[in-house]
Length: 561
Image (cartoon, rainbow, N blue to C red; front, top):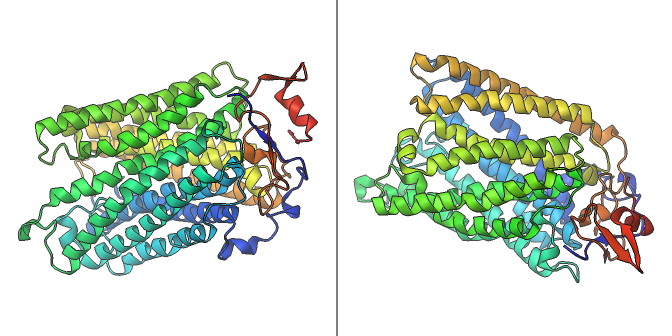
């Protein structure tokens, strides 16, 4: 990295009272300001996260004992189905892409807003009705066929609830597609003059990769769900075997989206972690181009690994071999990122604040999920543990240990920029400790449960699994309690926390070179490119004299805290 970064020399000390943070009512209206929309996404999806977490607590309460003694079997099926749907389509995907993507991308590239502000607002306002529609299905018998909704089970299991589930996911998928179009155009066409692709922050590269993946894969899921709805309500037989349909075709269409969906959920967090770790380690990012291009590689390879979910669906041996190899190969660009993050923090001056703790927790927990993913890529192992709790453990180490830890890291890191206030670090560390302990206590035992043969998606099980299930349930309760200090901290800090300067972390990416929170059009005057986004500890020559980044920022009156 050579040249870049920017400075907006006017009014950098402004806080919430002097710019966009003053009027809370705008967050409840149809705003076209990307910053307002980003916060609308984050708050709305967090509410759905709490609802999904409550459903998870109910599922774990049922599983605390071997007998079905808390809820009925039918309601249990609906609980884990709606829980998974909420966590994927109403929390991780819209929070990572819609929330942080909307808030950060224009700021990071020096744009005044997204390319299509009204379309941006429309994309957000599809989220609340989609979520409400999904939850309303409990009044008519919610879907109970799992978040995969495989036929023929989904065709005979509560038609009204299944149909509402399909409508909800179609609405949420449409929102995702509209957002992807906006992100791609914004990133490719609205960068600050002089900012090339290789001067963008790595979060922007991640969002570029995610948006392309969404546009290619999501319409395939939409097609599958539309055909499934025809089978459900019109009596067609696209996937119904009793009428000559092929349910395996549905699986191919579903997983062509739903495995890339894993990367749609995790890639934004990869980008955020790549921007968080250098700031709090005070070191340049290791392997900028390797991390950037590995995001594109993951986006491409993610489209050709879907059938590893179908090793037990009669997949031919030659096809199994292809998808096994492709799945293992995708670990290479992921490993590039992990080793680059480790090299970045190695020998750094680590500031173990809440953002850094969750960032490091993300790396460690995601690695565990990634290692079990390599195991599942192997056909013999996958056949042995398919539809067991080993898969549940792997999924949650990737998507909670990865995505949710990443989301929390991002929330703590960019909270001062969004609100103009600093969070309470003591409560943040308590939140991290409870989350780490509860998460591992809940999901680590599931690896052993799966290897011993406990099937997932069952309310009753062999009493020999009772001890590990009770341990997992206690962990789930701790995980549920861990959200309390975060909610208290976020609300109290937003209202009464110490005022944040424009750049409390002394960061070099563009969003920190304007006031906290930023004005309506982000910068008070057109910013000037100055240093690279990750040039920590690098000296620059100016008129024959070497100066540090901090000295250069001081000269242009940027408040570095």
